[in-house]
Image (tube, rainbow, N blue to C red; front, side):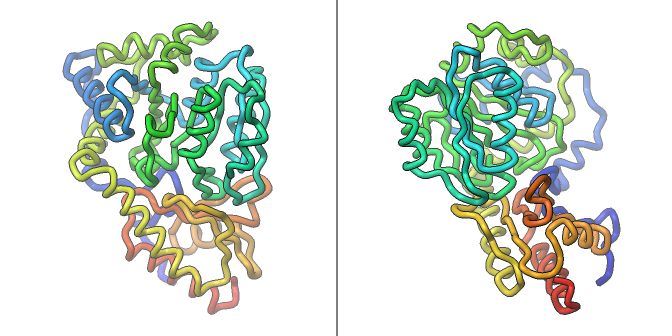
Length: 365
C-alpha cells in the first residue's frame, strides 16, 4: 500500500477534522487587533447566525469561550448549577462520564443513568426518575465514544413535564444531526469549533436561553476566566472579557455564513450520505457496528478478527497516513470509530475501505 504524503493525509477522526480550502486560507492571514467595532460586528453577526442555525429565540445569548469543549462543559456546570440542584446525568460512555466527573469535582448533587456500551436511552429509563425532585439534566446529544444518538425530543418532553433545566453537549453532533434547541426544550447547548464546523480547535460556544441567563446571573462563581457573567456583559457589545482566539472566530464567521447560505440541512445530509456509504461498504469486512440509533457523525466498529482496535488505528496511521479515531479506557482495544464530519468525500471512504480490504487479504484482520 503506497503511503500518502504527509500533506495529503486523510482524517476520519471526530476532531480535529479536515478543513476546507476557504477556511485554511483564512487561517493563513495576519490576525487583526480585536478591540474594534469591526471585530465586534463579526462576533455579533456570528451570534445571530448561530441562533438561527440552532433554532433558538432571539432572546437567547451566545458565549464565545476560548477553551476546549471540556472547558465549556465545566464552565456550564459551574455557572448554571449549584449545591442546591439535584442533577440527572446520562452516562453511556466516555463523554457522559465527563459530565459525571464534573458534577463530582464541583460537588453538585447528582444521580446517574448508566447505559451499557452502545445502548440508546429509552422512555423506560427516564420513567424511573419521574417526580423524584430533579432540577437539572446533563446529556450528550450523542455519546461520541460509541456513536449513539440520544432522542432529544424524548428527553426534552420529560424535562418540560418535570420542569427540569436541560443542558446538552452537542459538540460532536452539531450540524451533523438534526438539532432544534427550543423545540426540544433545551436551556443550554454546548458546541466546539473542531468538530463538524471543521475549524481549528480552540473555541467553544455556549448557547443559553433566558432561563439559563437567569441562573448564570444568580449563581456565585469563584472563577475569573470561567465566570460567564462577564462573557454575557461583554457580549452585548460583541466582545469577550479576555483575549479570544481571534483567528478562529473569523473562520467561524465565514463558516456560519456558508451554513446559513446553503442551509444546515445540506451539512446534515452530507454527513448522512458519508455515513450510509461507509456503513454499506464496511459490511464486507470483519467488523461489527455495535451501537443503536447511530449519529451521522461517526461509525463505531468492533473488530471481529485478530487485530485489536488500537492496533488497527496505529497500523493505518503509521503505514497509510490515514487517521481513524481510537478510543481510550476500557474501549481501547475493542472499539475504534470512523468519523463522517469535516471536509470528507465519498472517494475518501473508498481509500479507507481499500486499506482495510488489503489488511484483510493479508490475514491481518
